[in-house]
Length: 170
Image (cartoon, rainbow, N blue to C red):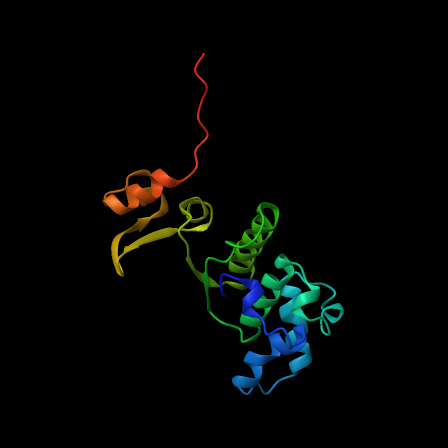
């Protein structure tokens, strides 16, 4: 999944065509329409037939991201790789998409690799965290271990940039 759902979809392709593209590349032998419909439903775009003819310009950012997710799901992967999957979305839609990713992981048994600079996001969805600096993994471990007791200076820098709620002193 790309970080920008506005750029991830071909503006000339319908939602159906966008989701079916991977199936066609993989020479899927089953019922394409059924698989596209199921993938859209899994991405919480229901009823799926309502979206078949839509083009990206007719969709909200959250709906576009769901179409991108449906396209990934259509080929029945074991793992989703998502690069900043909610970076360009507003706060309420971010929560919906994160909830969807967590639900898909649970319901479909998918693994997910989420690439993000947002350690708050990592805290909320990850079992483990790897921090990269200049193309090398400099820290890796459970989410709690890395984010509550960072060892590398870059991890500490990322954490210092995360927003915090400050307590008022009396």
